Structure formats: C-alpha cells, structure tokens
Image (cartoon, rainbow, N blue to C red; front, side):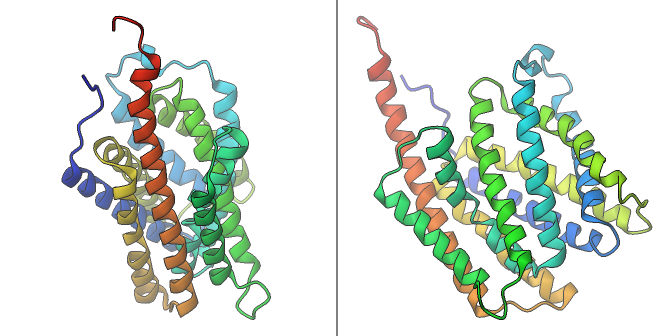
Length: 304
C-alpha cells in the first residue's frame, strides 16, 4: 500500500497562489524600505521579524525533533544565503522591479547545474536544453554590450546563483532534519549574521520605514510557510507556473508607485526563463515519481 501523501490539487494551487502574492508583497515592502534604509539593515530587520513570525510555528513542537547534528553545515548554508539575500535585496532596491524578479527566476537553472556538481545528479539532454534556454532568457534581459546593460543586473544574477547553491544545501540538510528544524536554525543563524554588516551602516528606521521592514519579515515568512504547504499537497510541475504570477504583480507595483516601465526585452526574456523553469520542474516531477515507484521494488525483502 502506498504511503505517499494524498494530492489535493485545488488546495495546493490556493496555497501556491497565496505564497506567490505574499512574496510579491515582500518585494514591494523591500522596495519601499530601500528608499530610506540601507540594504544591510533591511536584510537584518527582515530576518529579525521573520524569526518572530516563525517562533509561534515551533511552540509546542517536540524539542527532540528540533535537535540537529549539522550546525557547521547550517552556518555555511546561512552565510551563502545571506550573500544571496543581500544581492537580491540590493537588486530589488536599485533595478526596475520586473527586471530584478525576472532574473531571480533563473535560480532553477543554477540549481540544476549545482545538483550535478554537489549531489552527483545525472542530468540528461532535455534538461540541459532547458538550462541552455534559461541562459538565453537571461542574456535577453541583461543584454551584455548594449546601452541598457548595467552591473546591477550582474548582482541580481549573483543572487540567483547563490540561491541555487542554497537550494542544494537545503536538500542535503533535509535528508536528516525536519522542515521545521531547517527553518528555525536558518533564522537563528541569519539574524546575527545579517546584524554584522548592518552595524556598519546602522540608522534607526523612521516613521513608515518600520511598517515596511515588519511587512517584509512577515510576508517573507508567510510566503515560505505557504509554499511548503503547497508542495506537500501538490506536484512541483503543476505548481511552478503559478509562482510566475508574481511578475505582473511587481511590474504593476513598479509602474504604479515607482514610475517604472517594462521594456519588451524584459518580458521576452522572462517568458523564456519561465518556460525553461516549467520544463525543469516537469522533469523533476517525472523523475521523482519514477524513483518513488521503483524504490519499493528495489528495496523490498523476500516475503515482504
């Protein structure tokens, strides 16, 4: 008898859409906060209020389930994660929102590459073709050598590369630790690590800046929790396209509140990247289902 979790497509889609909107609001809050606060401070406050939002989720959880033997790996994962966060937050504050978010969607491309390097995963031709397509989408947005090229787009890409490495590290951590454990230790490390650079540029938030940094922490944590629930109830290949709804949301916010326009090449590049992501997610889901169906037969003992 199968022990896999039952699928609830509609509920999963609802959780994923809510997660996407939450992350979109986090991006908008970061952009507003960037008008008066340094990126380093925004990252610290996002983590601080994110930790406060996480704590109620682990209250009442068996303390034994939160213990870990991987503190060294958590530290490395969190240092790289802070690097990705700082680069990503800087790009949100200094690039057009649609461009920054479009480039962040290239993370699955780098996850595929990192999986071959660090996890020894075997990637076949079709997924490599999707990776190549993703790079083409990135080049369309960045347009190196053109008048529109800026070093800021490279910072956004750096965030995506580091985020891909972090995703692989989370896979490694999840082989031993539960999801609640990973989330809790991540924030426990993130808060002090992000405080260090923030101290060098410290300036207390004033007025509505407090609203934006609190909102960034709460919406960011809500998005992560909702995303986790969505993946428990549905398949990645079906849910991934829903996350693309974040792009028109932030593009509209950029136009409405920050006077930004989105050039056609950003839309074209984003469409190419999103198509690449959808195929990579589809292949990941097929391989996961195949592995799950073969595991009981391969591991069964005579008489079971």
